Amino acid sequence: MNIQQQSFARRGFLRGALAAAVLVPIAGSMSSCAGGGGGTTTGPTGTVSDTNPFGMADKSTVDAVIFKGGYGIDYVEFAGKGFESAHSGSTAKISPSTDIAQELQPRFVGGNPPDLIDNSGAKAIGFSTILSQLEDLTSVVNAKNLEGKVIKDTLYGGVLAPGTFDGKLAALNYVLTVYAMWYSDSLLKANGWSVPKTWDEMYALGEQAKAKGLYLFVWGKEAATYYQEMAIASAIKEGGQDVRLGLENLKADSWSHPAIQSVFTALDKIVKAGHFKPGGSGTQFTAAQAQWSNAQQAVFYPSGSWIENEMKDQTKSGFQMTGAPVPSVTTSPKLPYTSLHSAAGEPYVVPSQGKNVPGGKELLRIMLSKDAATNFAKTKLAPTIVKDTVPADGFGSTALVSQTKLLSDAADNIYTWNFIDLYGTNKDQLVVWNTFLDGKSDVATLTSDLQKITDKVRNDSSVKKIEVK
Image (cartoon, rainbow, N blue to C red; front, top):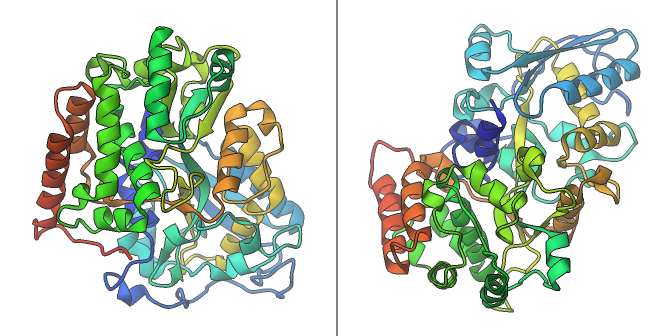
């Protein structure tokens, strides 16, 4: 995967294989996988202790296959060295893959899967096909890390839910993606502006920006639905979890929820006032992003936290990229202003039929220790699910500093949704949003067109529906 493909995959719109992995616990559809047993642990066993919580045998070899995408595999190799240091005589074999499904499905069928897998990328294995063959990883998060702390107590709130199916923690998603409204802190300070907390404040700032020859927003044709992400995040903040559940469960008239309508109306006012740079529907998305990050023709841009790495070669010196929560409609939304759309990705699994299941869990325990998680944050400029691994200076990245602050301020008020990539609707929604941002439709048309896309999926009996609670 190149950087562009990575960004689309991580933002949660086009990554169908990951969709199954990031669902909140579901009812009924996977009941055969319920419970915490997670299959029969295989492989030689050793003495159980705090430093060997899974009873891995001495001088073991652990076989790990890692998706080689934008994050590479060096961060797992780093943990592998820690594994070998903690268990003298043992070996961590770390192998890269760019096609997890093609390479590993035969091994699942043959009963000899790896001990640890990063089931990621556009060609990941569909979780529904292997769920019953995966270990329950509750024992991993209940174990102590290398620093002697219980792992589950070191993680950000809500990060276990994406990999939990009917009570079984089948996957640990290692990396956090933070969705935010990104801006240049230096630009705001130079103009004496502050980040708008409501859409009325956003409109007022748009008027000030226009007076200085700047736009509020830009967009590119392949990423018009970044504004759908921003709108949904804002509507959930304003109207609460009912908004999210209506969309997730494909409810009739879900797009007509008052909170969604109020956000659409606010966006429509901004579009009609000319605060979006024209021509986005004919502009390649990274070119549009460069108009923001390099030319600084616009003030804000909604995106996932990959944006810094994606635009690192096209960001103006001294830009000071920073993220902020999306605005709410009123000053008293149902969820706090600091609430946040964030989703964990890079799902790690331990197959029950691996030759060294204790070793697979042990390598994952090492990865979740502070040293390995800090190394990832430093080298990838992205946070893992482990808290307190980014220093105050963010390793020199203002964007990383702001991600840490956003997550800390949000606390447990973190949410995500999966209906778009689960049902593959982004392609159709792109058309609708490009038209809207071009100023060629209105709120009623936007709502109607999005609802038609939802209704088509809901009424298609050939599409398996997932109930989200």
